Image 1 (cartoon, rainbow, N blue to C red):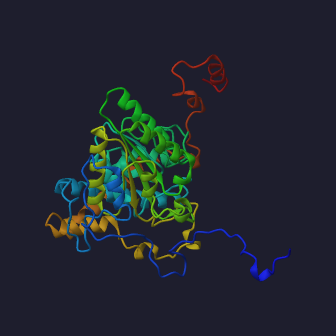
Image 2: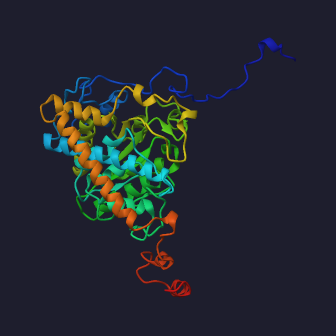
Length: 414
C-alpha cells in the first residue's frame, strides 16, 4: 500500500551547534550567569545531590563595583591579593613580550592566556607547594605564581642550549618537577588520567599532597576525560578536576564538546562528583573555590570538578586568526570583564592600591621581563641555529642506558 507523500514522516536531521558569539553578532558570550554573592558555599561533606542543585549557578565574589560579597569572600588576605595582582601582570607582560619575540622571528610558536590569568595564578596561591599540577598549554600562571624563573621559561621558548628540556618539547610546553608542574602533553586529555593516577598514588603512599588536573572545555570531549572521571569517582581520588571553559576550542564553539548538557559541570554530576561553575575572571572566587576543593581532597572527601567560565581573548596560538570565527570586540563585550582590572578595582576600593602604585608596578614588571629576555636571548635561539647537542636526546630517559642506545650515542659523538 502506497503512502501519500503528505503523510510521510519528516526526514532525519542533526543538531549542529552554533556559537552564540560570532562575527556580526551582538550577543556576548556567556551562559547561566549569576549575581555576585548569590551562590551558597556548601559544607565540605555536603551530598553531591544537593550541590547538583547549583549546576546552573555561577560562583562570584566581586560585584560590578569591586566589592567582595557573599559566603565565598574572605579566603585571601590583602597581601595575597596584591601578590595575585602582580602574578597576573607578570603573566600578561610575559605573553606580550613573547608574541613580540615571535614577530621578530626569534621563537617558532607561542600560546598566550590573555583574559584567563586569574584561574592559574589564584589556584597556585590557594594550593600547597607539594601539590602537583597536570596542566595544559595555557597555565603558565602556575609557574609564574610559584616563582619559576622567567629566564628559564624563555630559554625553553627559544629552544636554546640553556633550555631545561633540551629542545624536546614544542615552545610553551614547559616541565618542572621542582615546581610541581608536570610535563605538558600536546595530546590534550592525557594529563587528566595522569593526574588522577598520581592522586591515587599519593593516597596509597599515605602522603598529604593532592593533584590538580587541567583541561580545556574542547578537550573534555576526549575519552581520557571520561576515563579519569570514572577512576576519580570510584576511588575518591584526592584531585581537583579543572575544566577551563574559555568558549572556544580553536575555532570550534564550546557547544560541540558540551553536547546537549546545560553545563560542563553536569558531566561531574553524572559520575557522582561534586561540581561547581565559577567566574574564572574573579580572582577572589577562583582562590576561594580552589581552597574549598583542596580542603575536600585533603579531608579524604574525594574529587571536585570546577568549570571555570572565562574567555580566550587572544588567538588560539600564533598560528591562528580568530577574526574568521568570532567578533573582534568579543573580549570587550564579555560580561565577566578583565581579571586584572577587576582585582585592581577591588584593591583600590578597599584602600589597598592606587593608580600610582599600579603604574610603578607595571613599569617594574616591564623591566624585569625585558631584562630576563635579554639574558635568555644571549644564550641563542633555535631559529638561529643555537640548539642542544644531539647527544642530549639520550639523557634523562633511562636510569641505566641500554647497550643499543649507548651505541647510538657513540655514533653521534657521545
